[in-house]
Length: 215
View 1: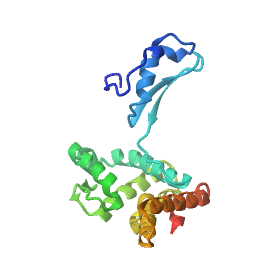
View 2 (view 1 turned 90 degrees about the horizontal axis):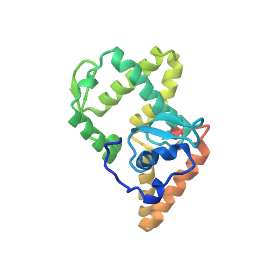
View 3 (view 1 turned 180 degrees about the vertical axis):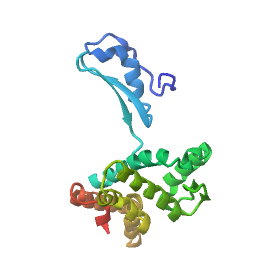
View 4 (view 1 turned 45 degrees about the horizontal axis):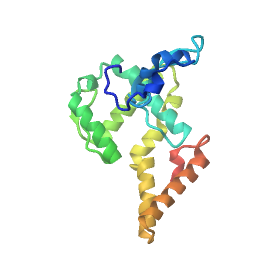
């Protein structure tokens, strides 16, 4: 991170000795507050006794409910447990292909054109086959780590539902906006209506439900 480009210049006033222990790392703190890596080291603490160094993992996307957030964390943990044990060939996937997959998923969600290699070493662009392979390995990893089959399946159920229905929170919001536009609302009104509907469903399901309940 120290070699990353400077995005926001360090003001001279911030370089003056302060009263906090982590003022000794002011430049580094400034950088990790403006240049966010997916996995980034963080150093802070008002005093030496309170100081800490930690690694933050930021690759998991934010979700509308607690259960949906847990589903992504469970999938990641299960894959990290299972893929190395089974020597899954995903590790051999070309970096350029992985990059293109990421960009395509960001732009098109579940409709993205993806390339994957299954556990049998077969390259595929079939969306259903890709997600089946990924989620099956995630579930196997959770079971291998000590979860019951029922618990593992339940953790990943919100993600399987998205694949089956081809619906994500983002596409759900787009659909609500399109409905408003079709009803004659302006673009600004449609966006506001979609956002209000999203927040309303989130309040209803944040702790005790999931995106599955938004149908």
